[in-house]
Image 1: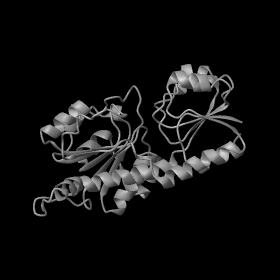
Image 2 (image 1 turned 180 degrees about the vertical axis):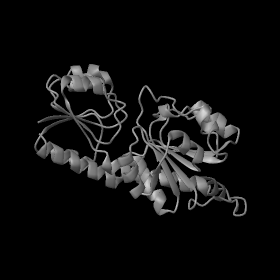
Image 3 (image 1 turned 135 degrees about the horizontal axis):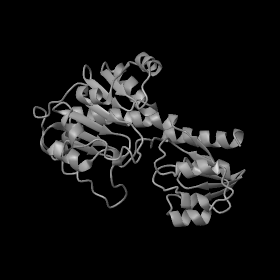
Length: 304
């Protein structure tokens, strides 16, 4: 089988696939480069950070399977792929746990001012009595998008004795019951915003929800609330978030995803000590990437 990797996955998984398949790697390549490499390929494996447009797919007449080594599909022209009848398989579960754990790490770091404490101590400052913080226990965790990732972080919050409220795009009694069993109360988006002490964003990016969370939404949140974006940068209006932080209305933010990503980009939020910035590393754990690689091998061995 002729495989094209547009993104890196677990290296040993690629090595194993080379033993049985014709493998071409064009990690994070431009559309022009992908168009050159896809001409005779049958399977395309990709993650975020690369654009799988209709123009790219049109250059692959033999393409019959797309494997998203993760969950998000905002970098894929899904409509064209469906028109072509190209099969799509996503592997969201391993990354969901990793992203949820990073979200919890960001909440803890913000609540206890871990980054500030580390920075001051490295400068020889003993700020023990200046760095008070908050417990997560007893606080309300708002899960804006209680899907695979959101419900995972919601379960973790419930285990920490947090009051967890979540919203989903298509609510139903059945889904409410499922979430309740996990310790998550299904509410409206407005209620989640209003009740959350810690708000995690866990929805896919689309044209309809670009800049979905802006000044109006931030003003409806509790004074001192924390925002954690684990989804996509375009969902949160960073200029409005900057204003909410500068005014002191929001207590801080943890941003793993950004409007502009890549080397050389400096976030406008970088000036705030109550903001933690990470470079889209949510799913980047050795354990998760190994599991994703094993799943790719399994798919290619059993589903083709």
